[in-house]
Image 1: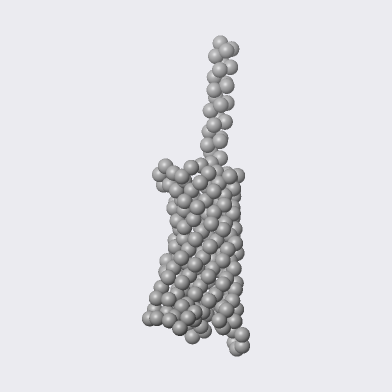
Image 2: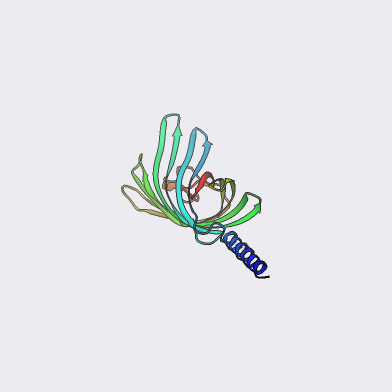
Length: 212
C-alpha cells in the first residue's frame, strides 16, 4: 500500500510540475526581431519611396504579453526625372507592448501598442523633422520552430504630432489621427503639404523573430 501511495504521489507531483511549466508559456523568454517596411508611390513624374528597418528586442512578462523596444531608421526619397527632389534620413526609438492569442497550432495573432519617437533631417532643404505618437497595429506570428518565427503586421490606427522646422522661417506642427490608412509618403517636408496627414512610417511590415 505504501508503495502504491508513493507511486501515486510521484505521478501527481510530476503532472503538477508539467502543468505549471505549460502554464508558464513564453514567460521569461527573450526575443529579437527586425521589422522591414517598404512602400512606393508615383505621382506624375515624381516617385516616392519609404523604407524602414526596425530591430526590436523584448521579453515576455506573462505567458502571452511581451514588452520591448525598437531602434532603427527610416529613409524617405522623392525622385523626379531631373534627380532627387528630397531625401530624408530619420532615427526611430519605439517602446512597445504586445498581447498574443493562439489561432491554431503554431499560428498566433497579436495586438501591439507602440509609442514611436522619430527625428531627423531632410537633406535637400536642411529641414528638421520630429514626430512622436501612438500606434495600434495587429499581426500574425507563425512559429517555424520553438526558437524561430515569421511575423507580419499592419497599422490599424495611429496618432502623430509632426514638427517641421525649416532652416529659416516659422516651424509647423501637424497633428494627425488616422484609422487604417495608407501612409502618406509624398514629400511631406514641403510645408505646402503640411495638411496632408504626414505619417513617417510604412503601414505594412514583416520580420523574422528569434526566441531565446
